[in-house]
Amino acid sequence: MSVVEETLRQKLRQYQLDYKQATWVLAVSGGVDSMVLLSATAKILAEDEFNQSQCVVAHFNHRLRPTSDRDMRLVMDYCEHLSLPYFVEEWQQPQAKNVEALARQARYTFLARVCRANQTRILLTAHHLNDQTETLLMRLIRGSSYKGWQGIREIQSRCLDLDLKSPYWLKIYRPFLSIDKKALYQYALANRIPFVEDESNQSEAYFRNRLRQQILPRFQTENPQYLQHFDQFAKVYQQAYQAHYENFLALEPQLILPNQEGGWTLMLPAWMALSQASLGIYLRIAFEERIVHKLPEYSQQNIDQVELLMRSLTKPNGRIDLGQGWQAIRQYDLLKVVPVANQSLSETQVFHLNVMNQWQAISENEVIGIFEQDQVTDEVAKGETLVYHLKLEPGEIADFYVRHRQAGDQIQKQDSSGRVFTKKIRRVFIDQKVVQSDRDQAWLVCDSSQRVVWIVGILKGYYRTIHSDQEITHSILYQKKTPKFTDL
Image (cartoon, rainbow, N blue to C red; front, side, top):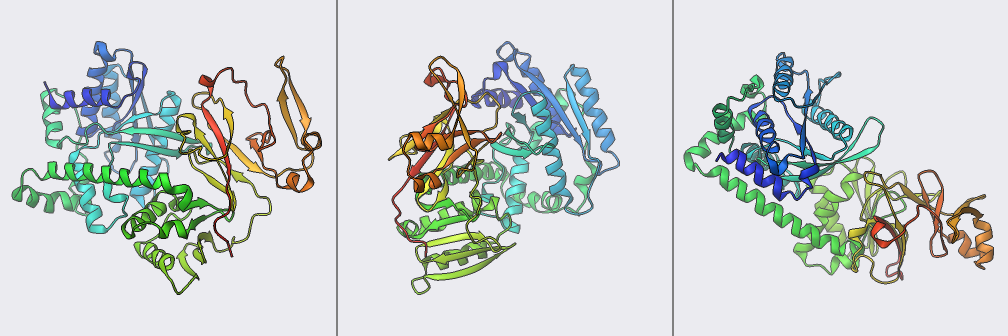
Protein backbone atom coordinates (compact mmCIF):
# COMPACT_ATOMS: atom_id res chain seq x y z
CA MET A 1 0.00 0.00 0.00
CA SER A 2 1.40 3.39 -1.00
CA VAL A 3 2.18 5.71 1.93
CA VAL A 4 0.82 8.59 -0.18
CA GLU A 5 -2.55 6.96 -0.84
CA GLU A 6 -2.91 5.57 2.67
CA THR A 7 -2.05 8.92 4.28
CA LEU A 8 -4.47 10.77 2.03
CA ARG A 9 -7.25 8.26 2.67
CA GLN A 10 -6.80 8.52 6.45
CA LYS A 11 -6.67 12.30 6.33
CA LEU A 12 -9.94 12.55 4.40
CA ARG A 13 -11.56 10.54 7.18
CA GLN A 14 -9.88 12.43 10.01
CA TYR A 15 -11.02 15.81 8.75
CA GLN A 16 -14.53 14.75 9.85
CA LEU A 17 -16.23 16.25 6.86
CA ASP A 18 -19.34 14.91 5.23
CA TYR A 19 -17.06 13.61 2.50
CA LYS A 20 -19.67 11.27 1.07
CA GLN A 21 -21.43 14.29 -0.40
CA ALA A 22 -18.53 16.73 -0.59
CA THR A 23 -16.94 18.65 -3.42
CA TRP A 24 -13.19 18.96 -2.99
CA VAL A 25 -11.43 21.79 -4.81
CA LEU A 26 -7.79 20.92 -5.51
CA ALA A 27 -5.19 23.64 -6.05
CA VAL A 28 -2.94 22.22 -8.78
CA SER A 29 0.12 24.01 -10.15
CA GLY A 30 1.53 21.23 -12.34
CA GLY A 31 4.45 20.45 -10.01
CA VAL A 32 5.03 16.94 -8.72
CA ASP A 33 3.37 17.53 -5.33
CA SER A 34 0.07 18.92 -6.64
CA MET A 35 -0.09 16.44 -9.56
CA VAL A 36 0.31 13.58 -7.09
CA LEU A 37 -2.45 15.11 -4.96
CA LEU A 38 -4.67 15.29 -8.03
CA SER A 39 -3.98 11.72 -9.16
CA ALA A 40 -4.26 10.12 -5.71
CA THR A 41 -7.42 12.05 -4.78
CA ALA A 42 -9.13 11.11 -8.05
CA LYS A 43 -8.23 7.45 -7.45
CA ILE A 44 -9.48 7.43 -3.84
CA LEU A 45 -12.73 9.25 -4.62
CA ALA A 46 -13.52 6.50 -7.13
CA GLU A 47 -13.65 3.95 -4.29
CA ASP A 48 -17.00 2.88 -2.85
CA GLU A 49 -16.38 4.67 0.43
CA PHE A 50 -16.03 8.01 -1.32
CA ASN A 51 -17.95 7.50 -4.54
CA GLN A 52 -20.50 10.22 -3.76
CA SER A 53 -17.75 12.81 -3.56
CA GLN A 54 -16.19 14.69 -6.42
CA CYS A 55 -13.09 16.78 -6.98
CA VAL A 56 -12.69 19.95 -9.00
CA VAL A 57 -9.30 21.22 -10.13
CA ALA A 58 -8.23 24.88 -9.97
CA HIS A 59 -5.08 26.14 -11.69
CA PHE A 60 -3.86 29.75 -11.49
CA ASN A 61 -1.41 30.87 -14.16
CA HIS A 62 0.72 33.63 -12.61
CA ARG A 63 2.33 34.42 -15.99
CA LEU A 64 5.61 35.14 -14.23
CA ARG A 65 7.67 32.57 -16.18
CA PRO A 66 7.99 31.86 -19.91
CA THR A 67 6.90 28.26 -19.28
CA SER A 68 3.76 29.07 -17.27
CA ASP A 69 1.50 28.30 -20.26
CA ARG A 70 3.16 24.89 -20.51
CA ASP A 71 2.22 24.19 -16.89
CA MET A 72 -1.36 25.26 -17.50
CA ARG A 73 -1.65 23.02 -20.56
CA LEU A 74 -0.30 20.03 -18.63
CA VAL A 75 -2.90 20.44 -15.88
CA MET A 76 -5.74 20.87 -18.38
CA ASP A 77 -4.66 17.82 -20.43
CA TYR A 78 -4.38 15.61 -17.35
CA CYS A 79 -7.79 16.71 -16.06
CA GLU A 80 -9.29 15.82 -19.42
CA HIS A 81 -7.49 12.46 -19.29
CA LEU A 82 -9.11 11.81 -15.88
CA SER A 83 -12.47 13.29 -17.00
CA LEU A 84 -12.34 15.83 -14.17
CA PRO A 85 -13.79 19.36 -14.26
CA TYR A 86 -11.24 22.13 -14.01
CA PHE A 87 -11.00 25.91 -13.77
CA VAL A 88 -8.06 27.99 -14.96
CA GLU A 89 -7.33 31.68 -14.71
CA GLU A 90 -4.43 33.84 -15.87
CA TRP A 91 -3.11 36.73 -13.80
CA GLN A 92 -3.83 39.76 -15.90
CA GLN A 93 -1.67 42.22 -13.99
CA PRO A 94 1.57 40.65 -12.73
CA GLN A 95 3.31 43.11 -10.44
CA ALA A 96 6.95 44.22 -10.43
CA LYS A 97 7.10 44.79 -6.66
CA ASN A 98 6.10 42.56 -3.75
CA VAL A 99 5.43 39.84 -6.33
CA GLU A 100 5.24 36.82 -4.02
CA ALA A 101 2.67 38.32 -1.65
CA LEU A 102 0.51 39.76 -4.43
CA ALA A 103 0.65 36.53 -6.43
CA ARG A 104 -0.40 34.55 -3.36
CA GLN A 105 -3.30 36.92 -2.73
CA ALA A 106 -4.46 36.73 -6.35
CA ARG A 107 -4.20 32.93 -6.33
CA TYR A 108 -6.24 32.47 -3.16
CA THR A 109 -8.87 34.93 -4.38
CA PHE A 110 -9.22 32.81 -7.52
CA LEU A 111 -9.42 29.61 -5.45
CA ALA A 112 -12.15 31.14 -3.30
CA ARG A 113 -14.14 32.03 -6.40
CA VAL A 114 -13.82 28.45 -7.66
CA CYS A 115 -15.04 27.15 -4.30
CA ARG A 116 -17.98 29.53 -4.31
CA ALA A 117 -18.89 28.58 -7.89
CA ASN A 118 -18.98 24.92 -6.82
CA GLN A 119 -20.86 25.63 -3.58
CA THR A 120 -18.12 24.32 -1.34
CA ARG A 121 -15.62 25.71 1.16
CA ILE A 122 -13.24 22.75 1.02
CA LEU A 123 -9.82 23.39 -0.53
CA LEU A 124 -6.96 20.89 -0.67
CA THR A 125 -3.36 21.98 -1.29
CA ALA A 126 -0.24 19.84 -1.71
CA HIS A 127 2.10 21.45 0.83
CA HIS A 128 4.49 18.77 2.13
CA LEU A 129 7.06 18.22 4.88
CA ASN A 130 9.89 19.91 2.99
CA ASP A 131 7.73 23.03 2.59
CA GLN A 132 7.10 23.03 6.34
CA THR A 133 10.79 22.69 7.20
CA GLU A 134 11.84 25.43 4.80
CA THR A 135 9.13 27.77 6.09
CA LEU A 136 10.15 27.27 9.72
CA LEU A 137 13.82 27.88 8.92
CA MET A 138 13.02 31.02 6.94
CA ARG A 139 11.03 32.41 9.86
CA LEU A 140 13.72 31.48 12.37
CA ILE A 141 16.35 33.27 10.32
CA ARG A 142 14.32 36.30 9.25
CA GLY A 143 12.25 36.60 12.41
CA SER A 144 8.56 36.02 12.97
CA SER A 145 5.74 36.52 15.42
CA TYR A 146 4.64 34.24 18.25
CA LYS A 147 1.86 32.98 15.98
CA GLY A 148 4.20 32.68 12.99
CA TRP A 149 6.45 30.15 14.73
CA GLN A 150 3.68 27.60 14.14
CA GLY A 151 4.79 27.24 10.55
CA ILE A 152 2.24 25.87 8.09
CA ARG A 153 -0.91 24.46 9.66
CA GLU A 154 -2.52 21.32 8.30
CA ILE A 155 -6.03 22.75 8.71
CA GLN A 156 -6.64 26.46 8.36
CA SER A 157 -9.62 28.76 7.89
CA ARG A 158 -9.11 31.75 5.64
CA CYS A 159 -11.45 34.59 4.76
CA LEU A 160 -11.09 36.14 1.30
CA ASP A 161 -12.67 39.29 -0.09
CA LEU A 162 -13.92 38.43 -3.55
CA ASP A 163 -14.57 40.71 -6.51
CA LEU A 164 -17.87 41.93 -5.05
CA LYS A 165 -16.14 42.65 -1.74
CA SER A 166 -18.12 39.89 -0.07
CA PRO A 167 -16.12 37.78 2.43
CA TYR A 168 -15.90 34.06 1.70
CA TRP A 169 -14.54 31.55 4.20
CA LEU A 170 -12.35 28.71 2.98
CA LYS A 171 -11.35 25.64 4.94
CA ILE A 172 -7.87 24.71 3.70
CA TYR A 173 -6.58 21.16 4.19
CA ARG A 174 -2.97 20.07 3.63
CA PRO A 175 -2.95 16.26 3.88
CA PHE A 176 0.68 15.84 2.69
CA LEU A 177 2.20 18.10 5.36
CA SER A 178 3.98 15.20 7.09
CA ILE A 179 5.14 13.50 3.87
CA ASP A 180 8.68 13.89 2.54
CA LYS A 181 8.80 15.17 -1.04
CA LYS A 182 10.89 12.12 -1.99
CA ALA A 183 7.83 9.95 -1.40
CA LEU A 184 5.82 12.15 -3.76
CA TYR A 185 8.47 11.77 -6.48
CA GLN A 186 8.48 8.01 -5.99
CA TYR A 187 4.69 7.85 -6.25
CA ALA A 188 4.68 9.98 -9.41
CA LEU A 189 7.26 7.79 -11.10
CA ALA A 190 5.61 4.53 -10.02
CA ASN A 191 2.21 5.68 -11.32
CA ARG A 192 3.50 7.49 -14.42
CA ILE A 193 2.02 10.81 -13.35
CA PRO A 194 3.15 13.72 -15.54
CA PHE A 195 4.53 16.81 -13.83
CA VAL A 196 6.73 19.81 -14.55
CA GLU A 197 9.72 21.22 -12.72
CA ASP A 198 9.66 24.94 -12.01
CA GLU A 199 13.00 26.16 -13.37
CA SER A 200 12.92 29.11 -10.96
CA ASN A 201 13.46 26.60 -8.12
CA GLN A 202 17.12 26.50 -9.20
CA SER A 203 17.62 30.26 -8.96
CA GLU A 204 19.65 31.47 -5.99
CA ALA A 205 17.84 34.79 -6.18
CA TYR A 206 15.20 33.33 -3.83
CA PHE A 207 15.93 32.78 -0.14
CA ARG A 208 13.95 29.53 -0.04
CA ASN A 209 16.05 28.11 -2.87
CA ARG A 210 19.30 29.03 -1.11
CA LEU A 211 18.09 27.21 2.01
CA ARG A 212 17.13 24.17 -0.05
CA GLN A 213 20.37 24.01 -2.00
CA GLN A 214 23.01 25.17 0.48
CA ILE A 215 21.80 24.65 4.05
CA LEU A 216 19.41 21.69 4.15
CA PRO A 217 21.96 19.27 2.62
CA ARG A 218 24.14 19.94 5.67
CA PHE A 219 21.21 19.09 7.93
CA GLN A 220 20.81 15.84 6.01
CA THR A 221 24.47 15.03 6.62
CA GLU A 222 24.21 15.73 10.34
CA ASN A 223 20.94 13.83 10.83
CA PRO A 224 18.92 12.12 8.07
CA GLN A 225 15.84 12.32 10.33
CA TYR A 226 15.87 16.13 10.54
CA LEU A 227 12.66 16.49 8.50
CA GLN A 228 10.72 14.34 10.96
CA HIS A 229 12.11 16.39 13.86
CA PHE A 230 10.88 19.62 12.26
CA ASP A 231 7.51 17.94 11.79
CA GLN A 232 7.37 17.07 15.49
CA PHE A 233 8.44 20.58 16.49
CA ALA A 234 5.72 22.19 14.36
CA LYS A 235 3.00 19.93 15.76
CA VAL A 236 4.00 20.47 19.39
CA TYR A 237 4.31 24.24 18.92
CA GLN A 238 0.92 24.44 17.20
CA GLN A 239 -0.66 22.56 20.11
CA ALA A 240 1.00 24.90 22.60
CA TYR A 241 -0.18 27.99 20.72
CA GLN A 242 -3.72 26.62 20.48
CA ALA A 243 -3.78 25.87 24.22
CA HIS A 244 -2.67 29.43 25.05
CA TYR A 245 -5.16 30.86 22.56
CA GLU A 246 -8.05 28.91 24.10
CA ASN A 247 -7.06 30.16 27.57
CA PHE A 248 -6.91 33.71 26.19
CA LEU A 249 -10.42 33.35 24.70
CA ALA A 250 -11.81 32.34 28.09
CA LEU A 251 -10.42 35.53 29.64
CA GLU A 252 -10.83 37.84 26.65
CA PRO A 253 -13.97 39.72 27.79
CA GLN A 254 -12.10 40.78 30.93
CA LEU A 255 -8.85 41.62 29.10
CA ILE A 256 -9.60 43.34 25.78
CA LEU A 257 -12.64 44.61 23.87
CA PRO A 258 -13.20 46.69 20.74
CA ASN A 259 -13.88 50.34 21.59
CA GLN A 260 -15.94 53.12 20.07
CA GLU A 261 -12.85 54.81 18.66
CA GLY A 262 -12.39 51.94 16.21
CA GLY A 263 -9.56 50.31 18.13
CA TRP A 264 -9.17 48.19 21.25
CA THR A 265 -9.30 48.77 25.01
CA LEU A 266 -7.20 46.72 27.45
CA MET A 267 -8.48 46.59 31.05
CA LEU A 268 -5.24 46.74 33.03
CA PRO A 269 -6.32 45.39 36.47
CA ALA A 270 -7.30 42.11 34.79
CA TRP A 271 -3.98 42.00 32.91
CA MET A 272 -2.00 42.73 36.07
CA ALA A 273 -3.69 39.79 37.81
CA LEU A 274 -1.98 37.44 35.35
CA SER A 275 1.43 35.91 35.87
CA GLN A 276 4.29 37.67 34.13
CA ALA A 277 4.61 34.86 31.57
CA SER A 278 0.87 34.74 30.85
CA LEU A 279 0.68 38.51 30.42
CA GLY A 280 3.49 38.44 27.84
CA ILE A 281 1.96 35.56 25.89
CA TYR A 282 -1.62 36.89 25.96
CA LEU A 283 -0.46 40.36 24.90
CA ARG A 284 1.19 38.83 21.84
CA ILE A 285 -1.95 36.84 21.10
CA ALA A 286 -4.03 40.02 21.44
CA PHE A 287 -1.84 41.75 18.86
CA GLU A 288 -1.70 38.80 16.49
CA GLU A 289 -5.34 37.69 16.67
CA ARG A 290 -7.17 40.98 17.28
CA ILE A 291 -5.19 44.19 16.87
CA VAL A 292 -3.52 42.98 13.66
CA HIS A 293 -6.81 43.46 11.78
CA LYS A 294 -6.58 47.21 12.43
CA LEU A 295 -2.80 47.56 12.65
CA PRO A 296 -1.41 45.05 10.13
CA GLU A 297 2.26 45.99 10.59
CA TYR A 298 3.85 46.20 14.02
CA SER A 299 7.15 45.13 15.53
CA GLN A 300 8.21 43.08 18.52
CA GLN A 301 9.53 46.37 19.90
CA ASN A 302 5.98 47.78 19.76
CA ILE A 303 4.69 44.91 21.91
CA ASP A 304 7.57 45.27 24.39
CA GLN A 305 6.89 49.02 24.72
CA VAL A 306 3.18 48.42 25.31
CA GLU A 307 3.97 45.82 27.98
CA LEU A 308 6.29 48.26 29.77
CA LEU A 309 3.59 50.96 29.69
CA MET A 310 1.05 48.49 31.09
CA ARG A 311 3.35 47.50 33.95
CA SER A 312 4.54 51.00 34.82
CA LEU A 313 3.86 52.05 38.41
CA THR A 314 5.14 55.59 37.90
CA LYS A 315 3.32 56.49 34.66
CA PRO A 316 -0.45 56.00 35.03
CA ASN A 317 -0.81 58.07 31.87
CA GLY A 318 1.30 57.86 28.74
CA ARG A 319 1.29 57.13 25.04
CA ILE A 320 3.35 55.20 22.48
CA ASP A 321 3.47 55.79 18.74
CA LEU A 322 2.81 52.43 17.07
CA GLY A 323 3.19 53.79 13.54
CA GLN A 324 0.75 53.80 10.61
CA GLY A 325 -1.35 56.44 12.38
CA TRP A 326 -1.98 54.41 15.55
CA GLN A 327 -1.11 55.01 19.21
CA ALA A 328 -1.29 53.13 22.48
CA ILE A 329 -2.65 55.49 25.16
CA ARG A 330 -2.69 54.58 28.84
CA GLN A 331 -5.30 56.30 31.00
CA TYR A 332 -4.96 54.93 34.54
CA ASP A 333 -6.62 51.48 34.52
CA LEU A 334 -7.24 51.43 30.77
CA LEU A 335 -4.90 51.21 27.81
CA LYS A 336 -6.36 52.03 24.41
CA VAL A 337 -4.97 51.21 20.98
CA VAL A 338 -6.61 53.83 18.77
CA PRO A 339 -6.10 55.69 15.50
CA VAL A 340 -4.42 59.05 16.06
CA ALA A 341 -7.00 61.03 14.10
CA ASN A 342 -10.01 59.36 15.72
CA GLN A 343 -9.78 59.47 19.48
CA SER A 344 -13.25 60.86 20.17
CA LEU A 345 -16.52 58.96 20.31
CA SER A 346 -18.26 58.45 17.01
CA GLU A 347 -21.24 60.75 16.70
CA THR A 348 -23.16 58.21 14.65
CA GLN A 349 -22.35 55.35 17.06
CA VAL A 350 -22.84 52.57 14.53
CA PHE A 351 -21.26 49.24 15.42
CA HIS A 352 -21.09 46.49 12.81
CA LEU A 353 -21.35 42.94 14.11
CA ASN A 354 -18.97 41.59 11.48
CA VAL A 355 -16.74 39.41 13.68
CA MET A 356 -18.30 36.07 14.61
CA ASN A 357 -18.18 34.61 18.14
CA GLN A 358 -16.67 37.71 19.73
CA TRP A 359 -17.92 40.40 22.10
CA GLN A 360 -17.82 44.03 20.98
CA ALA A 361 -17.99 46.98 23.36
CA ILE A 362 -20.70 49.51 22.49
CA SER A 363 -20.19 51.55 25.65
CA GLU A 364 -17.92 51.39 28.66
CA ASN A 365 -20.18 48.79 30.32
CA GLU A 366 -22.14 47.22 27.45
CA VAL A 367 -21.06 44.48 25.06
CA ILE A 368 -22.83 42.76 22.21
CA GLY A 369 -21.89 40.06 19.73
CA ILE A 370 -23.22 37.58 17.20
CA PHE A 371 -22.42 33.95 17.98
CA GLU A 372 -22.89 30.65 16.20
CA GLN A 373 -25.39 28.66 18.19
CA ASP A 374 -22.94 25.92 19.20
CA GLN A 375 -20.71 28.67 20.67
CA VAL A 376 -23.42 29.99 23.00
CA THR A 377 -22.15 28.17 26.10
CA ASP A 378 -22.92 28.89 29.73
CA GLU A 379 -19.51 30.54 30.01
CA VAL A 380 -20.22 32.93 27.11
CA ALA A 381 -23.78 33.73 28.18
CA LYS A 382 -23.05 33.95 31.89
CA GLY A 383 -24.76 36.55 34.06
CA GLU A 384 -27.66 38.64 32.82
CA THR A 385 -27.55 38.08 29.08
CA LEU A 386 -30.25 39.16 26.63
CA VAL A 387 -30.60 36.92 23.60
CA TYR A 388 -32.07 37.32 20.11
CA HIS A 389 -32.23 34.03 18.19
CA LEU A 390 -31.65 33.87 14.44
CA LYS A 391 -32.15 31.33 11.68
CA LEU A 392 -29.71 31.86 8.82
CA GLU A 393 -29.62 29.76 5.68
CA PRO A 394 -26.50 27.67 4.85
CA GLY A 395 -23.82 29.93 3.40
CA GLU A 396 -25.71 33.11 4.35
CA ILE A 397 -23.46 35.79 5.82
CA ALA A 398 -24.61 37.36 9.09
CA ASP A 399 -24.67 41.10 8.45
CA PHE A 400 -26.09 43.15 11.34
CA TYR A 401 -25.24 46.43 13.04
CA VAL A 402 -26.17 48.33 16.20
CA ARG A 403 -27.12 51.99 16.58
CA HIS A 404 -29.37 54.36 18.50
CA ARG A 405 -32.82 55.30 17.21
CA GLN A 406 -33.49 57.69 14.36
CA ALA A 407 -36.62 59.61 13.40
CA GLY A 408 -39.14 57.41 11.61
CA ASP A 409 -37.72 54.07 12.79
CA GLN A 410 -40.14 51.15 12.59
CA ILE A 411 -40.06 47.53 13.68
CA GLN A 412 -41.90 44.51 12.29
CA LYS A 413 -43.84 42.10 14.49
CA GLN A 414 -45.65 38.83 13.81
CA ASP A 415 -49.03 38.08 15.38
CA SER A 416 -50.35 34.68 16.44
CA SER A 417 -51.80 34.04 12.99
CA GLY A 418 -48.41 34.57 11.34
CA ARG A 419 -49.28 37.98 9.90
CA VAL A 420 -46.33 40.39 9.84
CA PHE A 421 -47.13 44.02 10.62
CA THR A 422 -45.13 47.22 11.21
CA LYS A 423 -45.12 49.46 14.27
CA LYS A 424 -43.35 52.77 14.84
CA ILE A 425 -40.67 52.57 17.49
CA ARG A 426 -41.89 55.84 18.95
CA ARG A 427 -45.24 54.11 19.55
CA VAL A 428 -43.48 51.13 21.12
CA PHE A 429 -41.74 53.43 23.63
CA ILE A 430 -45.06 55.07 24.51
CA ASP A 431 -46.85 51.73 24.96
CA GLN A 432 -44.01 50.33 27.04
CA LYS A 433 -43.82 53.54 29.12
CA VAL A 434 -40.11 53.96 28.38
CA VAL A 435 -38.77 57.22 29.84
CA GLN A 436 -37.14 59.75 27.51
CA SER A 437 -33.57 59.17 28.71
CA ASP A 438 -33.89 55.43 28.15
CA ARG A 439 -35.36 56.01 24.68
CA ASP A 440 -32.28 57.99 23.67
CA GLN A 441 -29.92 55.33 25.04
CA ALA A 442 -31.76 52.31 23.67
CA TRP A 443 -29.83 50.20 21.19
CA LEU A 444 -31.39 49.00 17.95
CA VAL A 445 -30.10 45.93 16.12
CA CYS A 446 -30.61 46.29 12.36
CA ASP A 447 -30.05 43.96 9.43
CA SER A 448 -28.21 44.80 6.19
CA SER A 449 -31.38 46.34 4.70
CA GLN A 450 -31.58 48.79 7.67
CA ARG A 451 -34.60 46.99 9.09
CA VAL A 452 -34.81 47.12 12.90
CA VAL A 453 -35.08 43.57 14.26
CA TRP A 454 -34.51 44.14 18.00
CA ILE A 455 -34.93 47.02 20.45
CA VAL A 456 -32.48 45.58 22.96
CA GLY A 457 -34.10 44.92 26.30
CA ILE A 458 -37.49 46.26 25.15
CA LEU A 459 -38.94 44.44 22.15
CA LYS A 460 -37.95 41.66 19.75
CA GLY A 461 -39.05 42.19 16.18
CA TYR A 462 -39.65 39.76 13.33
CA TYR A 463 -36.67 38.63 11.26
CA ARG A 464 -37.44 35.08 10.15
CA THR A 465 -39.91 32.54 11.52
CA ILE A 466 -38.36 29.93 13.82
CA HIS A 467 -40.56 26.92 14.53
CA SER A 468 -38.28 25.09 16.98
CA ASP A 469 -35.00 25.49 18.87
CA GLN A 470 -33.37 23.08 16.41
CA GLU A 471 -33.74 25.71 13.65
CA ILE A 472 -31.69 28.32 15.56
CA THR A 473 -28.28 28.77 13.88
CA HIS A 474 -27.01 32.00 15.50
CA SER A 475 -27.80 34.26 18.43
CA ILE A 476 -27.13 37.93 19.14
CA LEU A 477 -26.11 38.32 22.80
CA TYR A 478 -26.11 41.52 24.84
CA GLN A 479 -24.67 42.08 28.29
CA LYS A 480 -24.64 45.15 30.50
CA LYS A 481 -22.02 45.09 33.20
CA THR A 482 -21.38 47.16 36.26
CA PRO A 483 -18.43 49.43 35.43
CA LYS A 484 -15.26 48.37 37.25
CA PHE A 485 -12.81 50.82 35.79
CA THR A 486 -12.90 54.55 35.25
CA ASP A 487 -11.92 55.90 31.85
CA LEU A 488 -10.30 59.19 32.82
